[in-house]
Image (cartoon, rainbow, N blue to C red; front, side, top):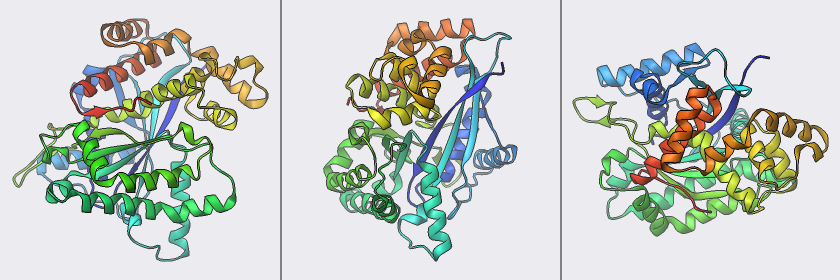
Length: 389
């Protein structure tokens, strides 16, 4: 039987100029570097060769010519990357041999410019619908704007979150009017400080404090808007996770792509963070009914396995209909031992689990334990702050 890939989706929101185009080029360039592949033993390749070439061209343009990638105005083209073990043994345990990351980008211009007509309004709605398959949404806060407004950060932050809310409002209103709340929806909305190299003294905790101090009301308004369209609002996290990001260090003379912050966490955030959060919510019985069924039927198969194993929906064999078939399938190919080690082990035990998985050729376990290590290290260094809820 051929091996399959585990597909995860991530949505990136940010106003024009916040660094989305640079971020995705920097991410792909970092993943293609030999040093990165040797460290994590994972090979990330763009599924569309043309897209991969363009991203590498942008990355090389920054590193060699000091050229900033062109912004994709009004473009909402998704990017797809597949990660596999760099050195794969002939025989591997489990039914998966890779993780696919699908990256959705919501154009920044749409947050503060009205649609030019019915066609653009339709494209905005379709783009938003495509984002609904994501497990994680990253909202970019422009570090350059924060630095520029030092001493008056409130004005920028309040306007940013208000614009994001207003930009999403027309699409949300259509969903509310339909009377059908969404079970399939990004459950984690993380705030990321892009261009964080311009604020070298700030930590993820400092960034959180800055947002809460100056824009708590606006963030809560965004949270309430998203809650209005999601089924099972107790299993929704908006503005509880914070990340520092720097795609490169820019100067008048050059662009230093070796000076990155947080870019290597994109894969762990897309794959391990939802797994970690779903476990916690499941243990707290925050996921029930159609929300539970949707997560089981989603591309995020690992989340379904975890849900079954912690016992909040019962054994796979007792779940009726096609959802039961999905649950039975994924529970058969991913072991409880793998999930437990992936989400609950820390420190030396986590590193030992990672080494054991690589030795045995257990791709999925090796990948998620390595990603869990990266998240743990980054949190200790103050680059990441994860919600404890």
